[in-house]
Amino acid sequence: MKKEDLRILFMGTPEFAVESLKALVENNYNVVAVITMPDKPAGRGYKLQASPVKQYALEKGLTVLQPEKLKEESFLTQLKELRIDLQVVVAFRMLPEVVWSMPSKGTFNLHSSLLPHYRGAAPINWAIINGERETGVTTFFLSHEIDTGDIIFREKTKIDSTDNAETLHDRLMVMGAQLVLKTVDAVINNTVMSIPQDELDVNKNELKPAPKIFKDDCRVNWNANTEEIFNFIRGLSPYPAAWTELHRPGTDEIVRVKLFASMLPEEVEFATLKDGSIKVNNEAITLENGSIITDNKSYLNVVTASGLLSITDLQLSGKKRMNNIDFLNGYKLGEGDYFE
Image (cartoon, rainbow, N blue to C red; front, side, top):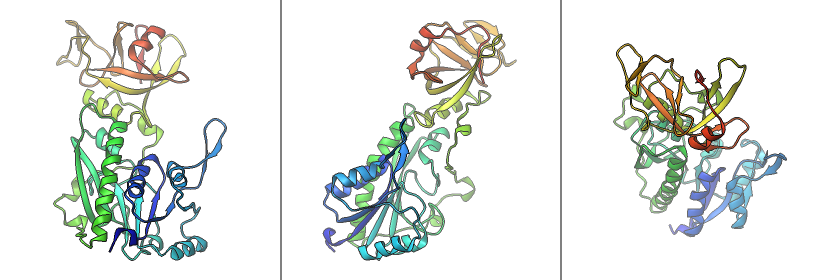
């Protein structure tokens, strides 16, 4: 089969999916239509806004469908009339079987983890939060349960300590687009050799999930150790963003603060003593987890269960995002202030 003879339907919504659609279009694959989410109100004026996938598809003159319900008879009729051979799904909602089973060559999905690990809605975030050293992208055929279908291809990448959710997202987005092309070519050449996930050498009891992350899940637990909090912050940066509350004893002031980046402090010599106290600049002091240690000039350190963590990028509620030095220049912290 020639690639122009394979009739492809692409399904996706966010920027992550655009890269894969772009790769298909720019390499002259036959994308006969695109399905994306209906326009949604966004911005200060709550004006209807098209998804990134729709915007790109319209720029390229592609047919765009935006069904409210994927089981509607009118939509299913449209699908049948398109005579699709293959459906490619990237960052879209769960499909009913009547949709994913329709094409003669099947439906495959691109997932941003090394399946079977990190099945779910937020694999990029959870891989970093859990301190993984590597992750990747996977293409697999859709089946009845989410993210459980037979694996076609996987591609690995290292997770560096400087990575956050944004940098890893962007790298996997590009890698994923290339894996989509590789998968489509395998379908065209009839060389797909998919593997059931339960045949992989993975202990089912060790599988790590990647459930959707809600705002309450993003609150920092200062009773965790330094490395855990460091990974938690970068795993949620820049979105949805880890957060904490700044408390100022003697006042009723409680301010929510988003935390975007942190590091092990360099400006302050510290050690955790056997009795649980912190030794700062050779002076032993006992502070509760979440307590702030700062010179109000160059560093903003917070006590954790295993030492200190230096906050380097943050945003007060209602204010702009800034680095720690700019923050300290405009917002002086007092003795006893703490995060909770």
